[in-house]
Length: 517
Image (tube, one colour):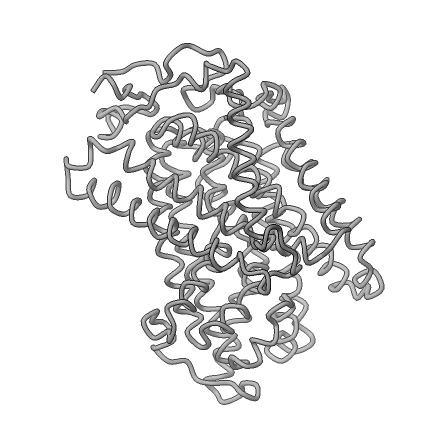
């Protein structure tokens, strides 16, 4: 039985891929995969957090990155199945609205948008700093004003690329992701070979199988804190799914790209972490807790001064590439929310020539630049605290997606063993793990003595104030939007997947109102 996907008609609701005016078939599976990997900024993410993980768990750092992969992979499965049923570029927003109602859907979409705004400036900042470092422009590198100005230029440039077209975005990413992943793998393999040959640095140690066992971690609390960090470094792969309406084979290719990207990230992260810990030893790695320059410091020793620049280049391309790709999910989510009556209609405009959501893209880029300039000017440590708050937001909307998948498909779960485990159990387990990490993030990040800035509000550290505060602001804005006459969205009823769509006999997005079952 097929029915309208909302309680009443609304002119901005897009039911099928392509209805929003985005360019269909602009990219293929490989480009979607590349964008998914690039959005995680693998080189920068590892450089930023590896020392923190090593300080907590020592040589078991690869095990923590392996364990962090589990909830990410399970949620990637939820993205795959929800995209197959509803290939909408709003992803978490659209799917949660259908499965769990417009209230939670709105907050989920808000979380996606705000995470992008929080992190884009910081990525551009890293790109600017290491570009000056790569070019040996030490004076500019050490000038906060110069780095800030260049970071804003990077944001403007990457926003422009996103406006000019998805194909251009994909072409840019092909070069950038190739440079950083290749550099990381070369660095890791050479380091491992040197350790095996007895040529490691002072303090180097031979890898052991116990390094890859989460059960070998001495403290459960240390493991959990490591998992919270892991949420950050894996985050971003779903950008491939946000481009579903612009991807060939939109109901399956983006979801497959998301799943495969998590697997590639797993191999990259575990291999590089193993190589760094083995070559430098945990004590030396731990010295870089607040310094993402670990790869630059080790590159001369591992690769020699003539080739060490490729590692710095990897961090530059990683940060700049992720600056661009992080704009994509926030802008596509804003577009979807606007088209479904949940955001101002202007954000739902698509450029007639470039076929991209130009107003939403420019809005996200501008908001990110303003956030970055204000808080970077006030305090670099406050900016770091805003990044810590990301773990809360990420765990929140990933968990929502996992629960939404099982709820949306709930009448299909008992029809086969595969459905039960891959559409039901897997996403729910992933969502429960992330829900627990959300709770633990609140507990751990509320400690004032552990925050970068040392600032507090009512005795609670800034990261939790920011994370929960942004979610509460979302609740307030949702209520304002609800009570200012937007019944077309907030009057929607919960739905379940059409059995024909679930079985693959019909393309998404046919849905059945819950009360019709």
